[in-house]
Amino acid sequence: MATGKINVSVENIFPLIKKFLYSDHEIFLRELISNATDATLKLKHITTIGEAKIDYGNPLIEVKIDKEGKKIHVIDQGVGMTEEEVQKYINEIAFSGAEEFLDKYKDSAKDSGIIGHFGLGFYSAFMVASKVEIITKSYKDEPAAHWACDGSPNFTLKKAKKTTRGTEIILHIADDSTEFLEEGKIGNLLRKYNKFMPIPIKFGTTTETLPKPEGAKEEDPAPTKEADNIINNPNPAWTKQPTELSDEDYKGFYRELYPMQFEEPLFHIHLNVDYPFNLTGILYFPKLTNDLNTQKDRIQLYQNQVFVTDNVEGIVPEFLTMLRGVIDSPDIPLNVSRSYLQADGAVKKISTYITRKVADKLSSLFKNSREDFEAKWNDIKIVIEYGMLSEDKFFEKADKFALYPTVDGAYYTFEELQEKLKANQTDKDDKLVLLYASNKEEQHSYIEAAKAKGFEVLLLDSPIVSHLMQKLETSKEKISFARVDADHLDNLIKKEDTQISKLSDEEKETLKTDIETAINNKSYTIQLEAMDSSSSPFIITEPEFMRRMKEMQQSGGGGMFGMGNMPEMYNLVVNTNHELVSEILNTKTAKKKERLINQSLDLARLSKGLLKGEELTKFIKRSYEMVK
Ligand code: ADP
Ligand code: MG
Image 1 (tube, helix red, strand yellow):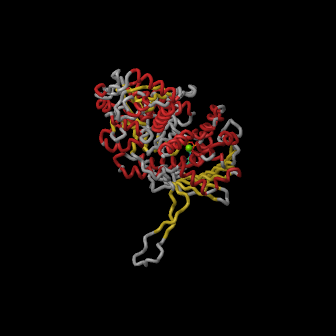
Image 2 (cartoon, protein in one colour):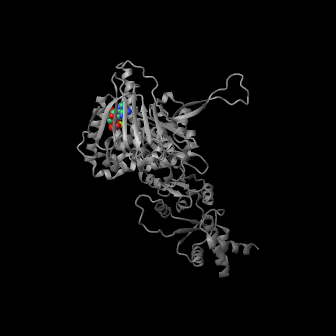
Image 3 (cartoon, helix red, strand yellow):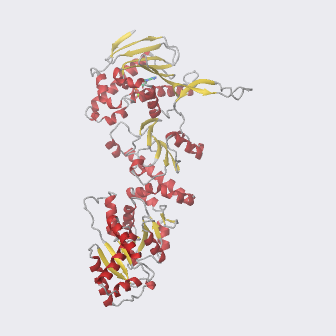
């Protein structure tokens, strides 16, 4: 038997480890299982290359809880260690790593969020254990070794009786960590960190139902058998080649990742690179709602099939954090802070690669199955629009497949729209005006009016689309967007359609003054227009610029803060060719004239959705009086 002092210059390193790592105690299990996995994979490697003439078999890693004895056992059937190796790897090397860590990061370690990624390895066991034992038998023909350490720098190392190959780690759980003796707690940790690790992990047993023997009666119970409960899938879909996987396999894997998610993903993107960095993974486009924030943080980051985090900020560009799935890369530096991560060159390349893959996938979907792409557009547009706003590289590609649906359900790309509309939807400066509605119900009368004039009306209803319009207007030549209830519509009236006003200039002056006096409201600018007699007599429009500024202010976009509240500003367009307008002009009694004007104004406001609350109640009351 040997006894000795662990080679460490920092006296009492354990209280330090405990202190520095307090926030992330649970990672001890991930570290021990990673070591067990490494040991098993090493064995696999040396048997494959023929260095050891032993049968690899079907090794397992087993996790056992001994609640009464207050112990957790992690048992593997891997390479094991000789006494000499324990001396070297556990007593010397590991400690030097820990010492270096503490030295280098004694200031930044306060930022406990980064600690878990350091992988303090084996010694993280002391975060939850007051004493740790290693009983290990190497695959080499040498006696087993038994190492024990009670949290002081003193250890014991002696020979052991173990005859089977592999390592058993025994944690004597400390009094302040007894939560880790709960089966539910350990089960959850295993499912969180080790769900896709490459070696099967056994935790407890399950009861398996066997087929009934021949001749068994209907009412006979089926026989059962106790079986190992394997908690992980050692061969998750992302580790396979896309050619090996069917559509069903991808959907199945999605359910495995998100068991509580009943909606199927719309499509997937298989990531697979090995140069200039290593990265595999599968990303899924889920159906997205307009609520941007609730859907983040669903992508899981793995390192060699070990779960690391579901916060992929910095690795995946912001607009893609709404996607789901898995990214696995040994090349993402996990042992550094987030701000460093964002400046890291390798990470930038990864982010660029992912953006490109997503754009290429969307582009091929668009080209190869446009109908399907159109059907999915409403569920994916938010990601695409967000991406077009935030990443110029993505904009360049997406500009060719981003769709602009009409209120009647046709879908056009920007280029197609330009081609289709350039003949009859330009204003007097020869600018193409893209009319759109943001709500089919609320803007119904305006949509109808625009359609009656032969204009195409788009339906653009995502919460960030006004930012995108702004971007398109500045990046494209001679185009502008105008909502159907905006003032632009007036400029769009085709020359050949121009109506002659029935009213003389003098009559127009009188009418204008009458209306201004009757409504007595500075928010309305009166505009007299000679329109078709079947168009509404009064129409309220809102300057596009003002409305969009207001909207962008509300959605908190690009530097719009601090502009204060925008004033209400409307145009009241009066159709001088409408019969009611002539009647207003010719009414002799001032009272009746005022009533006609205000009732008409209220109808126009109702149509624009501006009549609410007390005013609406009064309006309804007044209308009943009139029809009575
Ligand atoms: P790392 O895993 O990063 O090398 P650790 O502190 O986790 O650091 O482990 C130190 C070393 O101890 C390992 O490199 C390995 O040689 C040895 N070791 C730890 N656990 C086992 C195990 N279950 N089986 C065999 N060797 C092990
Ligand atoms: Mg390790």
